[in-house]
Length: 220
Image (cartoon, rainbow, N blue to C red; front, side, top):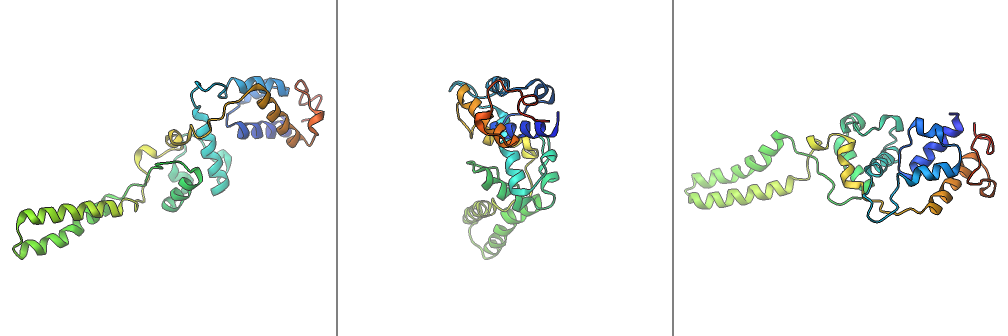
């Protein structure tokens, strides 16, 4: 495929949030053929499940636009540590805002921080109470309340990506149903022609459903 064709495929992938393999792309020579291919991959009925590909493309788009991470570096098995390097806390928060999904996973606290915050700080209050002769049952109540309060207060102070969320793919369930649009063939074809017009610098009325991208539309 030439540069024009590659860029056209990429634009279509981004617009419809699907991946078109190189072998498949080589066989798609007209807007109508692209439309038929997309119709087999998109949601066309309310009973169709939300494709996980949509979640990946949405995450990838956020990483490219918000963080400037090159497209070729982002894969489902890419780890967040590799993508964000040492700036995990700030980047994680920014990613959650960019994706705008509910219940975005929180970062985990380090073991040392958790022990000090949840067990150590309440102990600083409980030990003097014990030495002053306060009843043991009351100390336990105070300690428990303080530990619960410290746990709640520091729950948003994590700096580590939890093990179950270490890769891009692990976050797909949080965003995969974000785009619930149902496509019709007419809408898909119109969008494909619009993208072709933008990528090849042609007027929409110059592009027919059966126009060959190379021989009729001049794509290289």
